[in-house]
Length: 126
Image 1 (cartoon, one colour):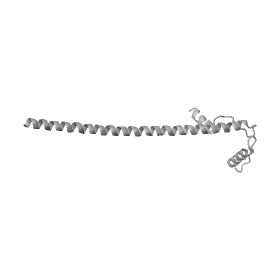
Image 2: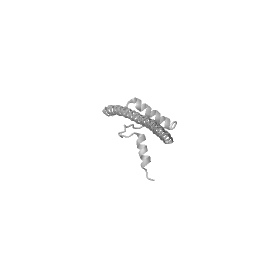
Image 3: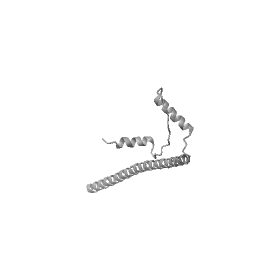
Image 4: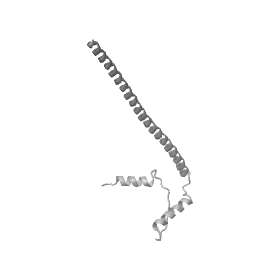
């Protein structure tokens, strides 16, 4: 009789341990799946935001290209408003010193002045 009681106790303990471990594995796998799913959603959200930014940048570059074409189609004259702004900037720099603007030419550089300054700064010899 003792052997049967011992066998039943071991059988029940074995079933309980197996089912507890199976339930624990199910919980771990479910949590792992949720963590991975949230990480994938974050990556896809970043990707979508980056695509939206790229789309905006291409739209902005298209607008810049249209503006640049409008400028290039111009007959080479600089608008009076731009000349006034340049004159005001020169006056602000020189102040009370006598100064005279002799010539204003449109830059044909593709890069901006800031880009050219950055290239000059980063490529000068040591």
